[in-house]
Image 1: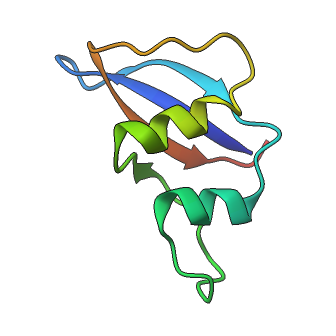
Image 2: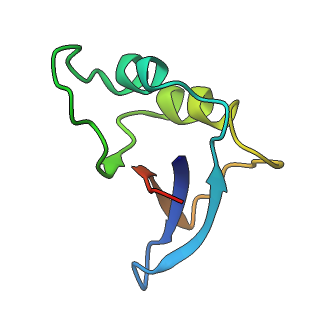
Length: 79
């Protein structure tokens, strides 16, 4: 499953995360600009822009609000 992760800017530790249970791999590829021909996209990625973050947040399980104290990334983890 994909997760939107928030890392504390000071400590660089994971502050919190949101599951993105309804997002499709094709949507992640489109938002992040990943190539369609790469079969192995299941890594962690920096969020390239505020607009990308805002679009990813629409898939978050739970209430999302932007936090300037963290850096955002997206990652994929098996459950």
